[in-house]
Image 1: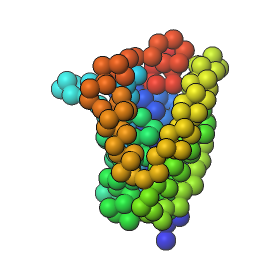
Image 2: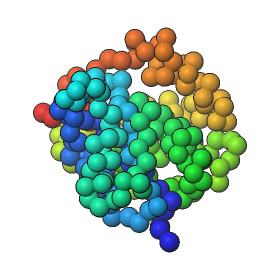
Image 3: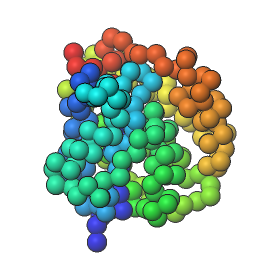
Image 4: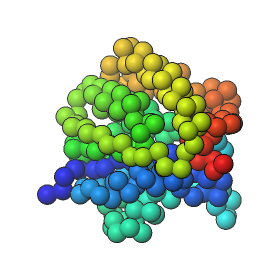
Length: 216
């Protein structure tokens, strides 16, 4: 019996050419060390960078290079379930639960992300998967290394993560059901409410961009 029903790997941005940055590869390598019925790379992209385009001019979803990496390293493609709807960590958790975990009855879930991203990721996934109606999920978490990111970039990202984590804690106090989260996402969250997107989609610059796939 596999150790987990699924291992979940949040996206971490792509390079300008659509390749996985080193810290995203580190997440996937940790995932490959586990036994699971399914492996689920997450994310369509981010509001903080325009998506890279493939040779045909189509956007490259973050989860797709990750899915190919897992397949190239021995995971059968039918055991890889890409999540290509989300544009942030809250979306990662929401769409993983509603698109894959609940319909397939996946309950034992192991989440792997970079050390710099872990505190907020754990808070979000425990909140979203704990929303009523209860799905009986059991979550565990594992941090991978911050490979390829400069110390300066990590300092900038740490400040952003602390501020974002404070916002998540405030949201968790007011949102206690999955339907309430859905309502908030599509009326107040600038990555999903279409009428707010113009303000949300602004590329990051400077050292912080390293944590979204920009190779210095």
